[in-house]
Length: 156
Length: 308
Image (cartoon, rainbow over all chains, first blue to last red; front, side):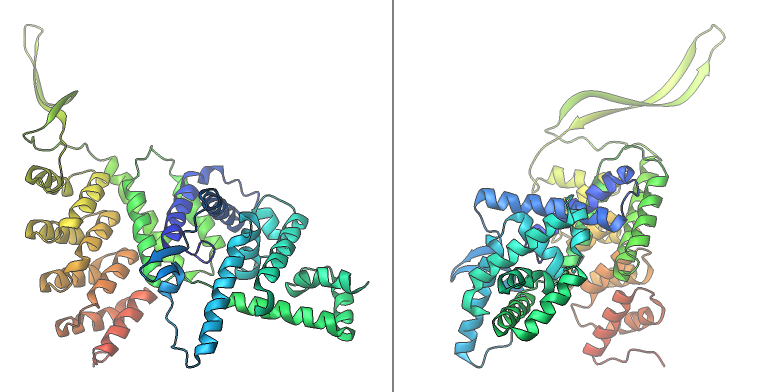
């Protein structure tokens, strides 16, 4: 959900992942932990989804409304009304910058960042999950962080 | 070691991913270099800002995901599967996801759905549906032999029933189609029952369909069908008859996912007649979600949680 930022996509991935687990269960040979295997399936489906978006040049996290484009996640958030309009404007801009920064990452960078920052996985495990080395995951995380720092600029 | 070297390592230092020796070097440098310390502070602020954009799935979304999955599994055409498959699945899930208590019961529910599905699949054939006017005949014919009587002349007399498969197509508002779907709701094949309930739930406004959904909820042996019926009953929770059936499912359904869905629907309408049911469920329910939901509803309705 956090990665795809679209409840519809998250719902599809949930179902696809569990059905794929069930279908491929016989191919699980205990050569890695079941959690790693599960993560591998989910990350593959999510990566496909992110790549499709890049190809379509669509951002399904953003939907069109009568008041202009709106992040789908904002429709689910209940925030306390801001007493300070300037602060509120700042927060809106910061959110937009963050979402833009996340969208600018490649699917792989986005995935590595999601797994490290939001899911708390170690880079060694991320490498195993994505079928790559810890070093490659490390480079990916570094690139992702640099890109976001440059997009967020003075906001942080 | 200079500022450039440290700056490149700040993200990995922040995530605790540097080798111990490099971590110590970075730490020592940060104590003595104001510029790099500011970079580190920016990294922290960026991480905090990103934490603020964390999106958590709502309980409703999780509910919908679980319901979709149950229905998809129940309606999925399957080959005969070795017995050990689900056991393997559950063992692996249990071992790995031991910390995720909330997943245990849905996983158990999936297993039950699957078991119900396979059991039902192996116990009979679909007798076929009643003919409708705009049907087209196919060549498939199924026979069931009723009796065999050999005679003295070396001959044999055989009595059999013949079932011919036919196909019919039409829109959902067609009465003939609806009749066939209502027949399918009580058929032997759980996959067909899931499909038919799934289609009929869009027309729950008709009393015939409503009754079929209530019947499926309380009596269908397949949890996927019961979940679909619950979906169809969502807009009808204001109906006392529907709430009575929801209470029945809440009290007696053996699949936690069904009880979770039932309680969600039941508590949407304040109904003093349900207070006793909820109190009873609070006393004996072992599913945390269901119990807490009942307790919350009782509090919201200003009713006591326990019975005295």
